[in-house]
Length: 109
Length: 114
Image (cartoon, rainbow over all chains, first blue to last red; front, side):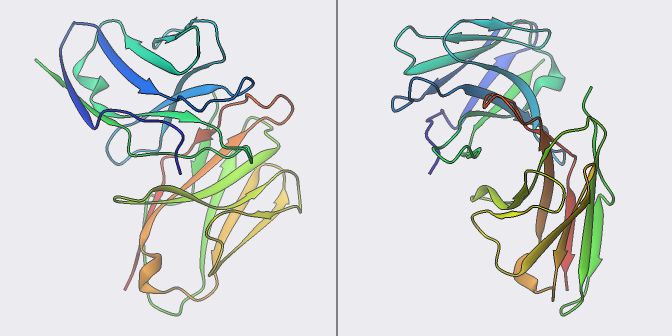
């Protein structure tokens, strides 16, 4: 079973920041949080990952709470092309990626 | 950028056929993976490989086999295709070494078994 919980869907206005929450209350001290997204009919695209510090790259920012039990992916200026299913993932004890249902994000004009 | 290429985007085969799905990565990654994705079931790991000629079973290996003769290529084989193997198949690769390496995916092969 996936070790994360995400809302099933959310809407975001074009040009605004999209904040995607994820709960991972059973995460262990050395486990990383990964974010992927999947646009319809394409493979999952890697976005960002982190351990405990906040991370930023050209696509997004990742904010991890101090207790590491939750995180937020921030898309700073959402565009229509950011419409996708977003997956928050913690590797399981065997090192495997377990994809849950994710959050369907719809960016509207 | 990492490039994972799957040989076909769409494939239609008949029940009982032997089906080969090919995957090639260009980043010298040691690890390669095969998943299938079905509505409501998410991604499920079929097989993975940590090195040339090495393979490990994932969560749903039944009815499948794999081949890794070269580092950059990982093939998934459906020995005798059945209709319940109709699915989206995704290949991924990652670096070995530190446990935090992300997996990078191809665009998938949508396989239909008639």
